[in-house]
Structure formats: structure tokens, C-alpha cells
Figure 1 (cartoon, rainbow, N blue to C red):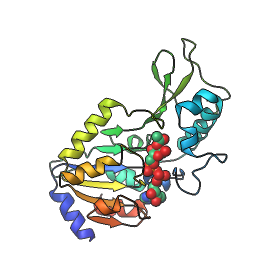
Figure 2 (spheres, rainbow, N blue to C red):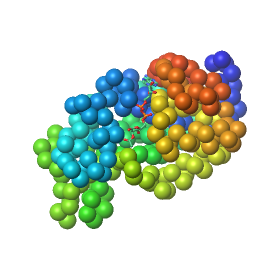
Figure 3 (cartoon, rainbow, N blue to C red):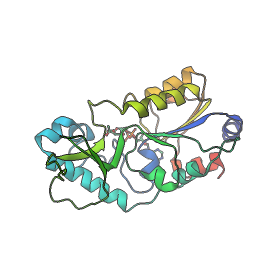
Length: 238
Ligand code: OAD
């Protein structure tokens, strides 16, 4: 099975990586729907919404601040590193479409990363819309913009649209891909998960890596029910 995947990948002209929280799990970051996914008893669906921020911005910020603290203390996993180091047969880097906001693909050295759900390291003013980079952790109050407006994490919350330019590039890549490796996503959040369907409709060969069965399994040509760390590096042979 592994040999078949390696062969397909080596002959692919437009491979693509798609990732979710599971690729970062072995670095020590909890996934959203795993056993440590709740924060003070609240789920992402309760905290990652404009309504939650409108009601209690400090509570939402405390959750993000906690996550930013965790992320700032971890390193990319072997799977992040393998993706960053892999080159296509034409010598090109493989684009990564990720739902993650942790920035670990970039820390591993990937330069073509499409962040469907934004970045936890960017803040956006809810009043004037300006965006700033920010890596400070240990917040005691809600950060403010120079204009006086509240700053929020520049991530996509439930009920919000994905950044249009990022999603349209992701769509184009999914349509044109002949090999997709999907790693560490439960596949339940749309429209991110629909990209796997779109690639499948375009006849891409789909490989899934996830220790658990997911709803993406039926789209995959091959599923490896394993943690990403070892198997991704093995399949990418870097
Ligand atoms: P989930 O928490 O829904 O799913 C993580 C997946 O990773 C699960 O299917 C796990 O089985 C798998 N997993 C766990 N450990 C793994 C490992 N070592 N190697 C490989 N896979 C592993 O996370 P996402 O699918 O990324 O959105 O969630 C999608 C979105 O829901 C997130 O981007 C976030 C969240 O709410 C927003 O905040 C908008």
C-alpha cells in the first residue's frame, strides 16, 4: 500500500497537501474535537463565533491567549517538516491548504501555505479593519487598535466567510490536482472539507492519514489509520 502511494506521488504533476489540527497533535496541541478540545467546558463552536466575542470579548481572548501560549512553546512535527522538505518531480514545493491557524507549517519552512481559517498570529480591528501581526501572549485585557476599536484574532469564526482570495486559490488547486494527501482533519467543517470532494471529482488520487475513521474515508483511495508523525515522513521519503 505504501509503495503504491509513493509511486503515485512520484508521478504526480500537481500534488497537494491538506491539513487539519491532527497534524499538530504530536507537537502537544490539542485538536478541536479530541478529548482535550474543550476549554473550561466550552467547545470551539461556543467560543469561535462573532456572537461569543460580542457578548464577552475577554473570555474569547482568554481562550485564544491560552492557545497562543501553547503554540508558542511547541515545534513543528515530523509531518510538518516532511511536507516542507518534499519536492515534486519538477522540483517544486507542494502547496499546503490548511485549516490550522497555528503557523506551524510556516515554522517548518513551507512557503506556499493557504490558511483557510486565517492566523492566530494576526489581529484585526473590529472597527477599522486594520490587520497587525502580533505574537504577545499573557493578555490581561482585550487588545485595542490605535483607533480605539477592539482587536480580535484574524481567524475565521463559525458563521463567517472564508477569505475569498485564499478560498478561490484553494479551489483552483483542488480542481487541478492529481494527488492529494489529507492529514489530520475530521472533515466536518465546511467549506474546507468540500475541497477533498472537488479534488476527487477531478480524479485526484486521495490519500488520507488519520488514526480514526472519518467521513473523508469514503473519498480516499487509501486511508492510513495512523498518527501523522511517522507515516507522512515515510510516504514523502524526506
Ligand atoms: P478536529 O479536531 O475536528 O479533527 C482533528 C482530527 O485529527 C481528528 O480526525 C483526529 O482523529 C485527527 N488526529 C488526531 N491526532 C492525530 C495525529 N497524531 N495524526 C493525524 N491525525 C490526528 O480538527 P479539524 O478537522 O482541523 O475551525 O477542525 C476543523 C476546524 O474546526 C478548525 O479549523 C477549527 C475548528 O473549529 C475554526 O475555528 C473555524
